[in-house]
Image 1 (cartoon, rainbow, N blue to C red):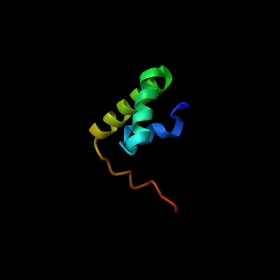
Image 2 (image 1 turned 90 degrees about the horizontal axis):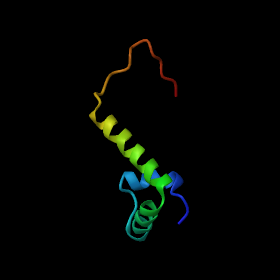
Image 3 (image 1 turned 135 degrees about the vertical axis):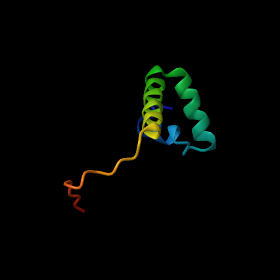
Length: 64
């Protein structure tokens, strides 16, 4: 397996199954770069889960 790249989010969010999950785990065990990226994303996710949901200020306009 090459670096996880965009698949890191799939790994961290538990969206990999079977063979690809096992391959990702083996790769992360051997690749410090991907291991660091997974660790950073997991910390970011944990921080966001702990942060408070806030309403945006009324003066902000959203356009679609």
